[in-house]
Image 1 (cartoon, one colour):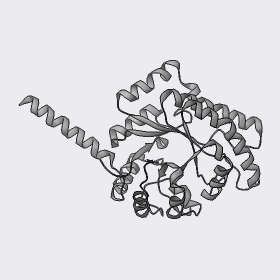
Image 2 (cartoon, rainbow, N blue to C red):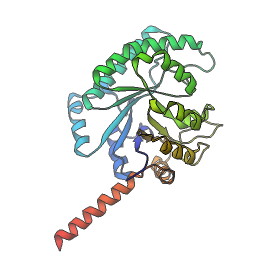
Image 3 (cartoon, one colour):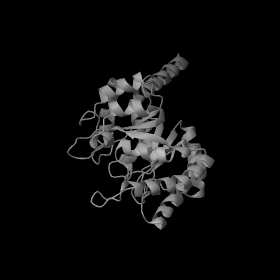
Image 4 (cartoon, rainbow, N blue to C red):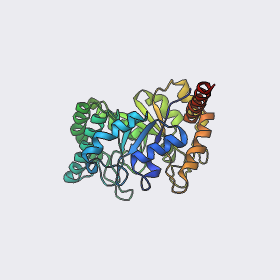
Length: 295
């Protein structure tokens, strides 16, 4: 299997399956072995895991050849950029639990959304920047102790929606060595250009998220159904010798399996690996071995 590396984001199954069920489903259906797990109830919430689950889940995944490449911490029930210190500290405490679990399980990355803000009443940039840097001052040592790399994502409804905003924030927090998860749909929706952004920031980009969107409505849907230029992005990433992982992130309510299948079809044409080929190859090898034994 060759091409740009891919993983699967478990988001589409958040309310239908727990994280382990979703990973197994994506592995059986499409051959995925690497995953970004969305951290959010009822799908996956560290403080709700039993002692047995904390102990056994990594063993089960290892036994099945599955790897959690990253935990993703969205701004659903938390806000890293809140101007209220007590609310920020509640968020940071929850992040700490996720970092502790990531360290114990050998998860290499924790993805943070840099807080959420109201588009109608956003605080001045410098105020958001100040609380972000203060949060990094607390969280970065936790990540370092756990052996986990922090990544911050470009998200439209966050304190730093444009990649230039995020670069400014990371420059202000440079001492904490935080990386970037670059979401191509998010970037395109807010008016950024991945073809201009990626050459400038590729050394800091550990992961990409791949989905499509139109400009009239914010989406994370099937690759090839929106305006994201995947053929050009695939060529550029190969030219840049990008070594990170691209997480296929479908957020669709109806038939996410179909969205994953069609997205993989198109991504494979544009330079990404197709995990289904490895699955088919393994199955053919097993059949050949069984036939040889029976001969």
